[in-house]
Image (tube, rainbow, N blue to C red; front, side):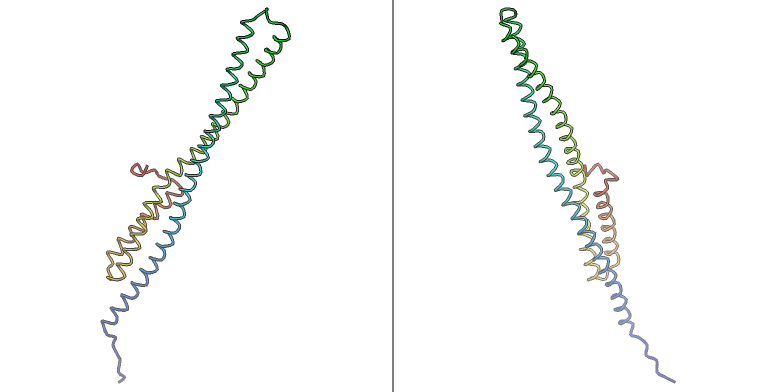
Length: 195
């Protein structure tokens, strides 16, 4: 009869552990990829938030200049009207025509600046909405990054210790972090403690 060599139980246990380590290592690599995607989303959200804030601030400054010009033309129109009322018939016809023409120009400019400032206000408010969306997204990416980093560390610990419960914690952190990342991109759910 031929000799059959039975495997050493310690070697079998080591091979089992090696399979576990490989699977955990693959999961860790996946966690790292998700972390990179999360980091990209967080960086983009922050950039868009800051850019929208700067553009909005610029538009509000432009809006203020339009309001100032509108007010100046309103004051000039009121001065021209007051001159026409004050001097009345005593004013010569040529001067009266000039005051009336200036009053009409001032009124038209006041109206134009009033309309322009409304358009600027709408654009500034759109940019503020974009900024607010970036502000809303940012905490989700931040917490997702933290949870994914914890997941990677816990997975590494589970490889070293061969502990399946630690790997379970790692998976839980990764799932929660991935969910927060997805929510950061889509804003499907608003969590009160992150707003």
